[in-house]
Length: 125
Image (cartoon, rainbow, N blue to C red):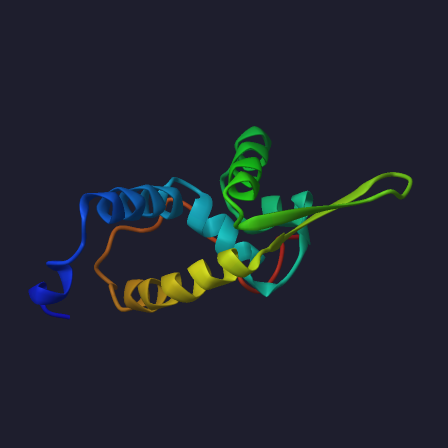
């Protein structure tokens, strides 16, 4: 990508990009989105997949990602109530954009270990 491709980016586009980058890069958001990449999950499944996040912060981040249209919350009126979260189309698009970053991060063997670890094989026992 050449510098010439960025010449036509106006201030509004720059602000939207900055807001989007901050949303995706906010602590835990990428890990939560990656955990949801394999389908709908319940709160406890996210908690098991996103190592180190507190229940309170996970609830806040899920609410934020839902408000941003990246995750959809589905409530089933069963007893007890069953709530699951799934990536929206926009959330899946963001994951596809983050995939090259995940691949790049795997090649950085000298990089600082991540703050959080997302297990893509399933929840911890």
